[in-house]
Image (cartoon, rainbow, N blue to C red):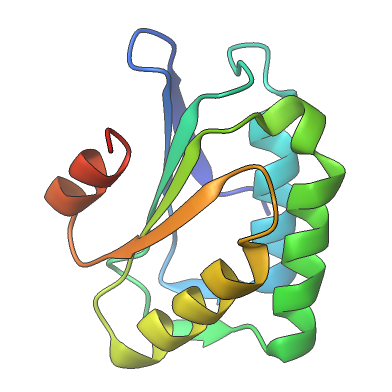
Length: 124
């Protein structure tokens, strides 16, 4: 299932609304859908609003797979910023691990506590 997202070309930004229950395959499908969306342009940033997550079904193998999905789409993604908004400690730990694994890719990943922080992170 692809998560709900909105791409604003004027802001060079996609905002993803992450549902309460998160499966790795859905994250991968959403990454692909965004980069293949006709409104997407290489170099846009993305905010993943995971502030409402209650169940996160992602393990270490899944994290590596998600990094590979990002790398497979690098030519479409460009060098924007991925801001991941999380409020639970477990989600933060997994997001920080993802950010560490993804550091060699073309995009910078920032893990933040709020949408306000995410907006600041994408402008740095």
